[in-house]
Image 1 (cartoon, rainbow, N blue to C red):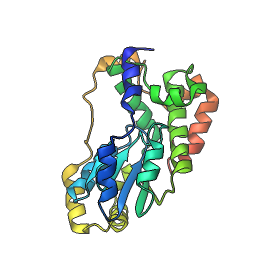
Image 2 (image 1 turned 60 degrees about the horizontal axis):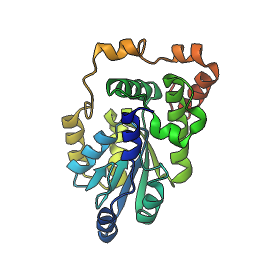
Image 3 (image 1 turned 180 degrees about the vertical axis):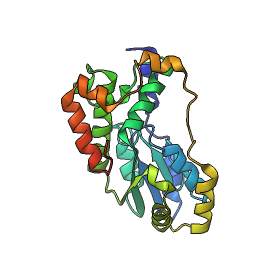
Length: 235
């Protein structure tokens, strides 16, 4: 295992006691947004913070947290303990093809194999190719979110550009609709993007696609298609 992979695993640590105390001591409703990596978590965090919700990205702040890490065993019990009552749980999802493409590019560009926090938790997938692991990462991580948390709403990040979803989002968190519309427009969709290099795609032999997954592993292909459809994605 490469040094960078171990650093990724090591970054998923228990939350500091002082953060937990701040969240526990502040009265009022809380927000927890759980997702896969590369699914728009920083975008949702930025949107909520612009609307005066003190939520953290991958860390606990007084009003809550938005993170892909919180279903990992090193964090999940703390999340359940801190956000037990008066908490809105959102399951944030993104088109799996986009997630796998983004994860694969990020891992290669940073010089690591990638998906180490996932295969540490699901070792049965560790010997598969990056694209196969990516497919099962999206499937299993989303399943775990649904299993471990009492989810109030599912949010497809792509739908935040649609008037109906914006209206629903405002209702979920008692937000001023006009301010929400303004910030959706101002923030755009380029939060937490990375300037990829052509060399990354060359090393990956091109971007992930369902056609490539079908050739490598037909079972993973059909598993991903079936699970994606549960969230309304026809891939």
